[in-house]
Image (spheres, protein in one colour):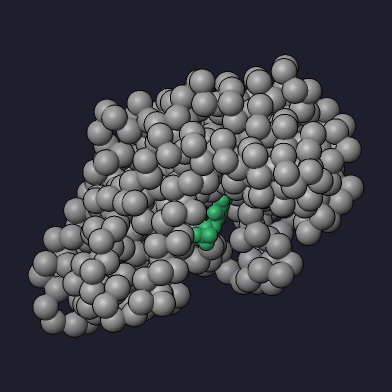
Length: 415
Ligand SMILES: *Cc1c(COP(=O)(O)O)cnc(C)c1O
């Protein structure tokens, strides 16, 4: 980006941003929750829409001068509804965690029981962690994946639901590489009279592109970030059935949020517009195809142990125990080689969140850059080389140079 004024007025910050642009352009981004927003999304965020106050909703604002903001927000709402086939959309949510807060408070009361996924098996911090608002305000009970298959065991979840009798069942995860059967979850929820909530933050782009089943026919309420596979600005949305529309809107404003971020709403509209195009379907298909190739290479060629034995999505979770590699050290070594990843708990981990046994990687960002099969094979080989040279600085720097050379052939939008 040009940033002409910023360069003149605040050289120090300008340099920091340029440095980050360089880091993003030269490095291999394998963090599964990250992506590159398009130039159009970036442009919409950097507009005078940031100047406006517009508490309320289109047609019912508490401030004057919102005729144009109303058009922008309605466009974002209409596109979100069309993209997912939803009856109602709220596009004002600041981010994924606050969106979950709004979802819980729309349908539940403090202290109600929620059945969600064990955080060590792929659940998110905002799904009941004791250090998070969710775990402090609601009574969470947890299901996990099957010990042997490392996949969801719907029979076991149903049994647990019958025992716990939760007010809400929550599905949608942050580190689960497999397809989720929303229809089956609906059945379980109906059997115990619970609401079904889906947090599709990680897989929203795959759902929009129809490469993962859509939860809309089954869920009472759905939350999603807009900045992960969906490739929009940082932010979130809530989708719900019409009968919950009023409750949801009232919880977002005035209960939890105040003035919406209209420049971000505009960028969300751009993102949904992009996701409605056939090119986005192609993109999402390639994301999954790339993840499958990468997973295959890691397993068959290099002997890595993948949680659940592979992937159906954008995400791969590597269990490093068989390789006797420390995840923390591995992440650092990969970083030195120009490859960004994150350490992660694996199901039934004997480690801690700060010192876990897994490595999580994903293909959304590198696929946006245009990388395909050949590059996936190269990346798998580098991951293996880093594993073999975890303490060999010289070798890691050599890999970093090769990573940079490859990355420079695949431009990052906005740089
Ligand atoms: C990323 C994520 C969130 C949180 O989103 P933030 O925008 O970081 O608050 C919530 N739920 C799931 C499943 C996620 O993966």
